[in-house]
View 1 (tube, rainbow, N blue to C red):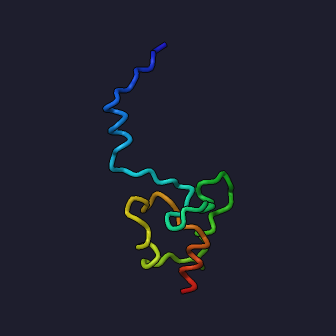
View 2: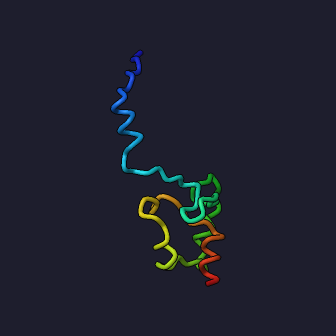
View 3: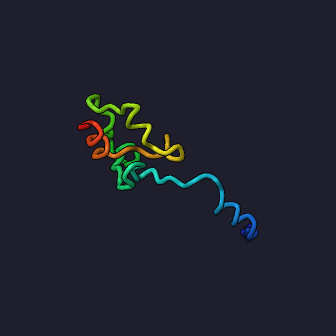
Length: 85
């Protein structure tokens, strides 16, 4: 059985200080609350965002930080709040 090799302090420091920020796919990138993404669940039901009556205009998508783009879904309340404007 192979032994796990300890990591050097330099490796751990580089890992912690890397430029890539961790983005939780379960949280909305706008409000940081749970996004209840149906695509992440084991449900057979499609996610609410797949409903054709919901749109994600550029004005909404542009509010998402670059680090979170294509990594986390906007939650339904944020999408509806933007739609109401």
